[in-house]
Length: 405
Image 1 (cartoon, rainbow, N blue to C red):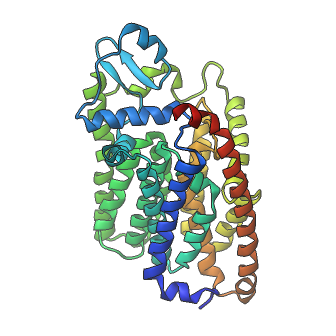
Image 2 (image 1 turned 90 degrees about the vertical axis):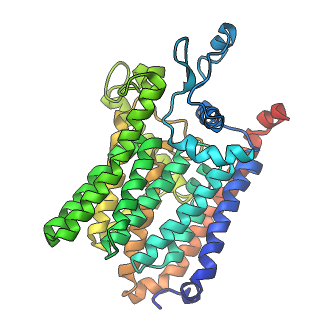
Image 3 (image 1 turned 180 degrees about the vertical axis):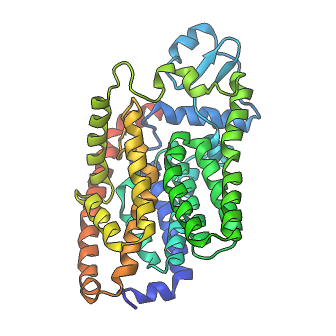
């Protein structure tokens, strides 16, 4: 075997479930013990409010009494005398939280998303004939991955949708049947129902890769597969329009912009290009630190993508660049307690870059010899950073937890 942990490859049917279970346990541990079950944002409360309404068969509630309305005005929910009281957010993430809300333990669902995302990305590694354990290791060492999954934010189900999209697309791309493009399209549709702007930003990367494949193959099967992909993906925008109509009374009136019309994309008011680029610089620095717990991780993975010399490296690079560049148009930088929130769905593409490099570097003896040392060093930095952040968040959430007791 080209990598030192050959027994992990042979025992994948035992080790992969164990890695997924570890991701689940780590996310739950961070949410319940490190964060003490508290939330950092009113967004999380809004998702819980929405999921609780769904659990009762409601899309919106009656407006609260007028004095209470003033107190709740900035709670990330719309309060309208005619329409009622409902979340500003699209329905996808609340639907994901729904089983956990029904069980009385909503944090189960982000933890489950962590486990499933790891399973899918290790599956993507197997599809590419790259070491699956490398994908698992990078995800388990990523403070970005673990601490985000301790929250109730929509980025957790967003990462799951993106991981499913990438896994299914790669399965089809590497010779799988057309049903994988239907699954990939459905995954994108679910991403659109939770993180619509991020979903839209990922379209050019997949569209370009699919176009190149079509131009190379020019066969009926490829064309049919891409039509199936598009048809399945279309369910996302259509369901979103239906939800808008049911909640706001207009298909093109989103609850999000009804709550805050100034949150529209583009440069207006105080949000200028300079401000947007400032957000990009700040958030990229956060990404560089949180991705693996030390600075320089993004540069290292970008070099991996370049060295891989694969068309899939172009897909990964375009997806990352589109998301980072696209949020320059958004007025808010994110609350960003544990890395840049809006960039979280790029994580599968950073993993893809590492896998593509590992697949190619398997033929390079020098890389095989130095890989254990580099991975051990990365693990040391990552674990040190994670330990410090656990202590930081335990201290930060002590007051909130005491108030909840």
